[in-house]
Image (cartoon, rainbow over the protein chains, first blue to last red):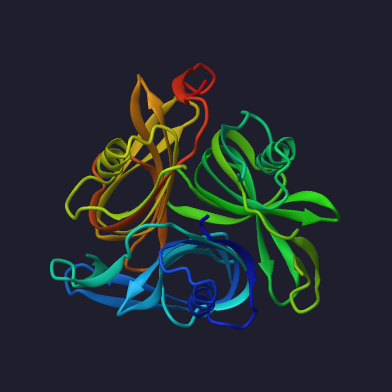
Length: 134
Length: 134
Length: 134
């Protein structure tokens, strides 16, 4: 039976850290994650495909968390959550990017689901300079 | 065996009401929901984290429904669907928010999935003034 | 046991074609799909609900793939992937639409899941002029 967790995350905590904590507590090393709610602020990344660097976009305002979609795998033997976020501001406009450290939870409802199979390890991928599944 | 429903929703109906109907008909009291399609119009909410009130954003145009992500739990003993929407307009720009009453379906394809576990009840949460899982 | 596939897609390939290939290789004829990553460029569709035609929006820039949400069913007896995309550009602004041919993968991590049940066939739907589940 694959593990499935539907749970509330804690206000004031970092979103990716919280999801990683829940994955670790349930020992989910391979799976998917989805989350909705609201954030006090966010830190989004845009990966520049030419310079191979993440450009950071701080979002210093309260936002709705429309869709957090991501997955769980292993990096350096540790549980690693990769999450992309779609947000909206008080005008209703949507923004988004790769979830970096600094996305602070106002309220969040998450679903984590184990997907059974051979371990998925992130290894350096030369064409993209990212750590992808080998 | 957890229940899983992949189904088309009805044109002209309210999106959240339709998802709630399908959840009720299948007696899914705890789970997740996702939906794509198009809406004739929408009504989006932005939760103001300072005044603790939803600000309504009517969207009086036809939009693509890029991603409806949400969950199913209980509120006052009744099946309750919490759904966030990402939409796009004819320029391709994205917008979104909390799905309120008034999101009218043009076409919609939904997936509802039961997640087994102890009942999830929404109760008033003082720090956020929202009804969250206790 | 329903089939579940968590996998990396190939750089430089067409996103919908890649997802269709994975669905075919695993013989998933009914299910859901979700994907995150980055695209070298994209081709988005907006369905005009009055003229009943897709308007194409070419996105000639590198974008984050925030949320690809969709489903798998049958059209003319063949496995067919219906996918909606939410993207963001280097300013963090979000855009999106129906995924058309021409969404080129930079990096992509996908989850495909079979949902058991009676075959879902797309048939012409007169009110919307779309091919929907009959």
